[in-house]
Length: 350
Ligand SMILES: Nc1nc2c(ncn2[C@@H]2O[C@H](COP(=O)(O)OP(=O)(O)OP(=O)(O)O)[C@@H](O)[C@H]2O)c(=O)[nH]1
Image (cartoon, rainbow, N blue to C red):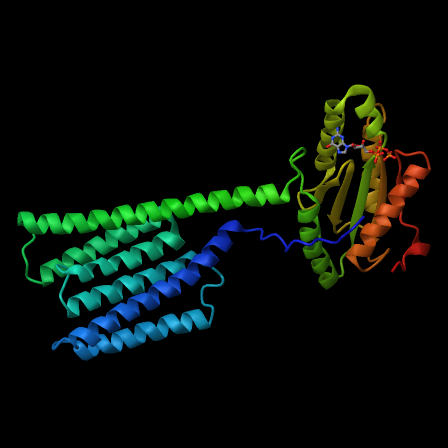
């Protein structure tokens, strides 16, 4: 059995990865906003009224964004922190528009940056609420600008802008959602055995290392079990490949059925399965496997089992897998359909 995996570890929370990727985009959008505001000030000069306040607000906003990115503020990816980010952005844009030309000019489209930021990180519903908040700020600025809303031209301007915010927000958030769903599907495809739906070798190796690290830290035992079907080739040859598939599925369901929710059950390839039982010593694992063997005593299904436990039979996961594999071959050599424990004499493998 090889524990070599040339691929990088799987990333288990695809939504988390998605948000993580998009938070990088969030900082870039914020800096783009600061650059646009700075460009405006360079070209147009500071507004006479509230100019210095605007400059200070821009510097403070840039400082906040820089500090948040340097301190990896959003690495825990809490949605409410991301929401606060977008509110601050909306507040800053509103201040900028209030200090400059209001919402009647092209600068009103800066709100699109906040809409896109929200759509990338917060989902459809939160984005629709953010668009509602932007609409409120927009209408307030309109009132403060002293312009009447009740002319056909102004009504057309306001409604066009707000509809654009709404559509861009909705479409971006829907696109992000579709990406997240396809990421989850890819993760399932990369980590599952297609026939049984169990974890595949790669996912097992990945998760087993995490459980091993936890056991090492807490000095709790765990057991590794290798299960190999006996005579699958004969079933394939005599009854056809589909009967062989059914036998594999049957064993997979039995393994899943006897496992706790915290146990790992995986198909390691072909007719070989592997389990990892946290908080279970060799004796506990052997008892469980004996019950499993007894439950299929009358059926055609036969399999050989090897058990090795941490720390009794080794302190490295790779060694335990080899030990369990050897014990499984011992079971096969002794006639099959039985469980063997790693011989303690061989524990210093390596
Ligand atoms: N039906 C089916 N057969 C498979 C699958 N994967 C591997 N096999 C077959 O399983 C058989 C395994 O052969 P062996 O390793 O000799 O195993 P065995 O016949 O169970 O014999 P022992 O392990 O020595 O007891 C091979 O013929 C493979 O082609 C699968 O997904 N479905």
